[in-house]
Length: 391
Image: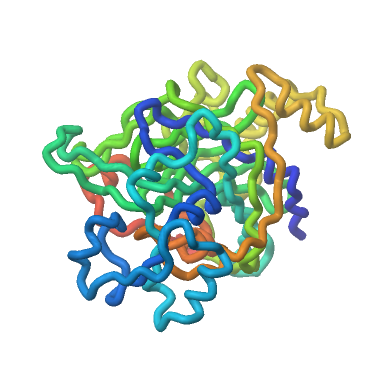
């Protein structure tokens, strides 16, 4: 039987995100975006990058339904009910708002949370929880192609939904691994529990790439697309540790029978803690189990971390003090249950569909990481969606 996934668990595993110091495009809340957006209807379907200046050249034309500043969530759903094809709707922004929320007050911007129970494909038994921590940006910036030279500026679009997924054992709620997502889920990377980067107080760390906002377990340069469109992350920019996370309760949360994840999860050297010989030795020695009983090395790594955290008392207040008070300390966020109407919106945010309509929202993450060679030289090759079921 699956354990209960409490708000405390959701708060505990919420990542602390390090943004790139040169990124001009900060995250924002859904409400911030809607307050500044106009609602448009693409007669032949949403296309392009969603910037206002290109509307005159969009095939079939674009109609304005609600001008900027007049969109509310209630009006959004009313227009959705009125139009012939709701999927042709798009919320769009003027370029003056592309920068998102004030970077000096990033803690005010929430991270959205969706949790799902994954069932064993063969027996239908609870196998794992996957918790999606979902981020939203007003704008996805340009890539200078090739090799960072401004010969071709491409990849930009209005609206940008990203996510990081934490995977827990369904019975014990022990961390099994973290899926660091980038670029439509095809360039994501699994990081096993012992190698997940952490703050001194135990919080999961994610590094957000400049402009594209994919999330990685390490900082530096991530080579991709024949080295022509590399991602870059940094520890020198603003730190996003939200005071609130919003659990998305306005959409169905049904358990699913799903293709099994891998029996093993291979770490990548770039994900290791700097100077953490224990995590390094554990991850290098062998493949680490993801869904089966933990290896002795992984258990040792977890026991080592638990030993350093023995002062946690049984009260919720003491647990919060423990998680937020050690080392540099990042306070745990408050969890809000969000049933806002925007979760029923079927249209686009700029030119990107909402998280509710992306495959990872209702399905498990890919079972294996996309390796460096595939990310570099086979960018269009399909990923691995499932592995053969266990008997």
